[in-house]
Length: 441
Image (cartoon, rainbow, N blue to C red; front, side):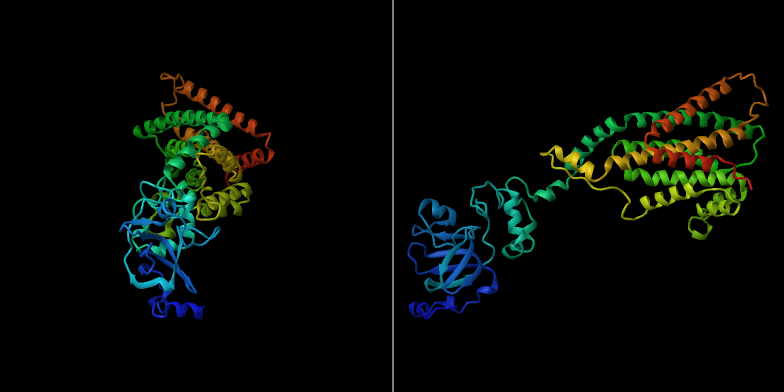
């Protein structure tokens, strides 16, 4: 409220009737000889007081200086007392105001707007001061709409502490640290999978060459387009998934693993129902009703009494992890590079290691089922490629047997290593058992 004594002191001052709620920059002329003019942003008024934020003041010598410089060189100003003082706020008394002019944003000063520290550029000396400014919505009031987002706000960084972490450099720092931890923890599994991929690729190359030879001499039969596509794409799918997991992107690897899993299931079923292979080859991608999907495999297996409970559960989990669900992709980890311990903490809270190992186990699973397709179906199609000659003039049979034995050994080693984690071992073993049985009616 305005006191009567204040009105009597200077009833003609325009400050008494001015709309101080307009929240704008103003230029005040006063009757105070030591401070004849002020420029600042109106925060609010209370009775006889007008509160100015980020003020500059005209000295009797005709020089404009900021309020912090005034205090340093000349002395105290009418001001709020701590803890309420911030942004160099000062008080101007309404009875001293001779004239009020609204002005545009007056420009920068070489002081932090919060604490008054001298800075070479920007408006704040550190992000936390800018943070308070923004949290009070003063950036929307004190600056022109486009000015608040232009240039550097602080001397050190134009971003707030948390926002600063959303940067490719921060992500790169985390990925580098996490990749090393991944290698330390899962190096043995990664090496086993790498060897399986390498040897499987060689083995499928032997059988593919033999099948092509049969086709060229007119002995080819029982074409299964899905099988050829699935085994032929194994190097790309498996290497892509492994590279992503090794580089910490287990979430990005899972859609590839799901695609691989579905292809394996359809490819095997097509061996028992050639019409599925033909339909898969002739399907029109623009017509959803023509698409072959895993339901076209699981429903018939149920009808003929083939157990597929674990395979169905694996597919359900893969779908949940690859569609846009709350468990798809992976938790974003943004450690502060200045706090190396943050990496370990974030990996623990995000269950990174558990998810990474599960993705490695799923990748192993599709490789083991792919090996079944190679040795049982592709190998059968390759039989008789050299007119039944078993003299092995090119050493193909010898290489085939060596590779098959080595892959079998690697798969068994991986399974043996998981026996310490019984639920994982059971998941892998049951999937393989359901996949490897005959699907004949």
